[in-house]
Amino acid sequence: MSPLQKDPAKADAIIRAAIHIFARDGLDKGKIADIATEAGIGKGTVYEYFSSKDEIFHAMGDTIMSDMIDASEKLYSMDLSPHDKLRTFMRMNIEIIFEMEDAMLIMTEIWAQGARAIKHGEHPNTTLYNASRDMKQLVINILKAGVMAQEFRDMNYDGVATLALAFIDGFVWQFMVSSDRAAFDRALVEGIESFMKGLER
Amino acid sequence: MSPLQKDPAKADAIIRAAIHIFARDGLDKGKIADIATEAGIGKGTVYEYFSSKDEIFHAMGDTIMSDMIDASEKLYSMDLSPHDKLRTFMRMNIEIIFEMEDAMLIMTEIWAQGARAIKHGEHPNTTLYNASRDMKQLVINILKAGVMAQEFRDMNYDGVATLALAFIDGFVWQFMVSSDRAAFDRALVEGIESFMKGLER
DNA sequence: CTTGACTGACCGACTGTTCGGTCATATTTT
DNA sequence: AAAATATGACCGAACAGTCGGTCAGTCAAG
Image (tube, rainbow over all chains, first blue to last red; front, side):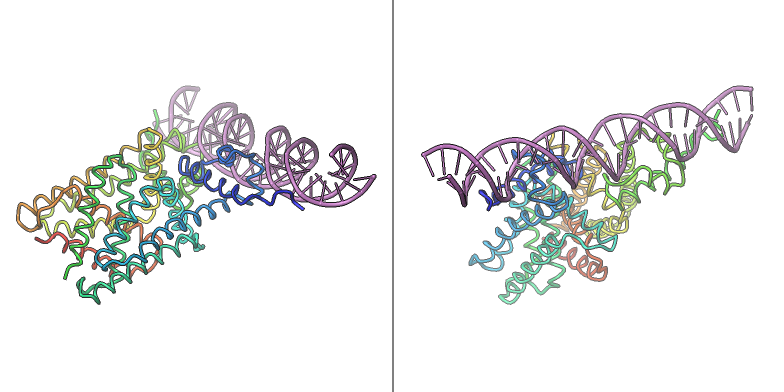
């Protein structure tokens, strides 16, 4: 018997360290050795928990996405009008992503990796892509409820949902390289209002 | 004397090959040897034209951006109402980026590199960032003209311009991993209309 | 013959992964 | 209770593959 069953908290510490290191140095340049140091363990130990760098990428993607989905679902259960729900959804999502600075950079690369995989005819990282599809469906549901409640104009749901998600991604993307947080907030408010105005009947 | 003073066409061929290889394999995994083969020359020759992989990245960024700016400027000189100009600007930019599949993937990585550089307190790739700033200014100019002409409502120019660019980036981003071109076109039309509606007085 | 563009074998730095050994702790024995 | 034993988590030195960059030599043009 093992005196200490492979500490799950340690696997978590490795993922956390990996997120930090890979966000800092990039997916390729980020070294396993640095992750080990950051996690306060030996390099060999990393391989007791994950069989390869690639497996760390996947675990990392799963962790990040589940963090985001948790946050989104909290919103989904709130009791708001479709109008407010959508507005809140957009703002919250952007803030969540924006706050998870490290995750943002990593997801950019994982997403690009996925796009490349698709070009090669391979499978992309499924967690990330499933999550993206779920998010879109969530927005579509809000939109449908809004049209039903006569709050929104008639629309092509898929198109508008895509616009909403594009807006979220693009906003983060735009500000990923800007450090002016105040300008970010002003632009965000104006951007969301403008978007909502586009949905009026 | 050289019979052919360092053939500029060859430098171009190298860049073109680099764009192809790096888009396929990523900035880190893309090999100089492969670029040389793709360009039909020896590896050593690549170093006659560019002193390092990093210099190739920069040259590549410059080439891609100047291609895009050329396309945008053609639009800028068209004689259209602010309304149509903005609509066309967005659609054209998306189509241009979307058509330059390879460039898209590379820019994603260069942009992420830049974001990381900023985090480190270093300089990002200036070409890319200057171009991005120029694009925003171009949109702001169109918006101002539209407000002046009473075609658009009053607005926070910076916010709406950011929204427009976010829209462009995000749309491309969303569809980078989708192969359904027909859905893309439908969503694009709806998305642009919805955006334009948000600017009505 | 001179020049310089071109080449690819080669070098060395780098890093993901392996593996033999160590050690803290649990369990058993005395 | 304390000594002996067993376990497997942990470690980091060593290994092997990769790839950016160099350079000694080839070749073609003038």
